[in-house]
Length: 627
Image (cartoon, rainbow, N blue to C red):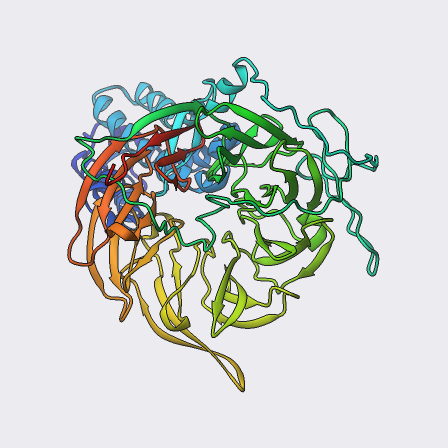
């Protein structure tokens, strides 16, 4: 066939359809089948299989379809224009974030399917009706995406679609009757000092204090609409069962608890379940009170609930809202309880010190203005760390420390460019230090002044908590990309301290375990975590894999070392008990807990298990061994 053939003569020739059907099959196998049956190959299938399928489709239509030349070129041009123009009418959740890029991974297979179906259905029609149907098919195949929104993505990058006009879980929650706190927030008995309200909606940036000037406390609106400075000293320390993110050492290890593992005979017993505002916060627990963070409309909320009943005790609100298309709205960090105070870090940069008893505000800061940083793409996700008389947060890979009593800045650590990990207190060679994983690698600073002690460069996503293991070695996990299909893996570095200062050396690097945003646990010389969406065990001596098994999506895990047992919370809100031993993967029990995408870390205090996601939270009582 030559280019100068007329449309009239070509239109009389039957379309050659089988190459188009074959290209469609390749595209759908790469996009929908291989990622399910072979998760380790998912990212390669999506990229290379998708590219091959699209190129095969284009080659078929442009050179082997027997369609009129004008029809061939016109269809390809119209497809390109429609794909580029459609994002202008899409819902913001589909047009932005990762979905803004993934849109083409969804739209192009649908467009190819619709086009091949058009070619088959209209092959016997006259020329102009067939062309009219072709134009309508292309426009509808692209424009249909304007009918949808997403509620974010899964850990593997798959969008969770809903009708554009349907109410979100947050909107349904806000439409319910407003729940009144059992303890209305009230200020401690000191004189209030009205000042300018400095922390407002996300995007409003308070002015940074002048160089050499002692910064004033920055305030937020309380529940009663007032602003107040409450520079009180912290109350005396009381026992806190679970002080914050992944327990005091931020390692997810729970000593002193043994539970029954036969859940067919002694299943978890639901204490309560209740809806909650969106957010990826976990819990801090003190006595019969739990603390978490959530989004309620235009307010970022710190909430205290009763552990036994699930009833609201108090609620503190900040006029701030963070949202991005991948994970949705709400705070990303977990509160920290120390003494009678609870410290929180919001997704837009608000650091609060609140009375743990009633939620009244002691002081508030804004990290964005204090450190001259921008809110990162996924929001601030660092959970506060209290060390002595300072509270420390990580602002997109850079550390900031505030006086626990006044909120005045004490020091700012070295910048890391980006990152979503939380600072943690560790001791290496007898030296207490703050360790942080950021986008450049892992750093260690002195708690007193934030000065750099040592660092190890290994660029990655800076999400996970590092682990200090035997001999002062540090275990780092990096997984880059959805599902860690192109992830980096794990690295063990030796950290030593001598007369010449600190020395850091790499022991090994392994891709046998590639955690993405799901923290790992360490037990008896082995690391257990998620390689993509599959639970995996590696040997800490050399990084070699011992086993891989059990699909829990991109879930979270805590360790009960007294029983060589892991408690897994799957990405779908299902609980599982898995043996923490290197011999083989062994699942002991499963139990459905909550529904919906669950990225939040579980908490186990005594026999009470607390779980939540962006829609609901619940408490379950586990049967203890020996009872």
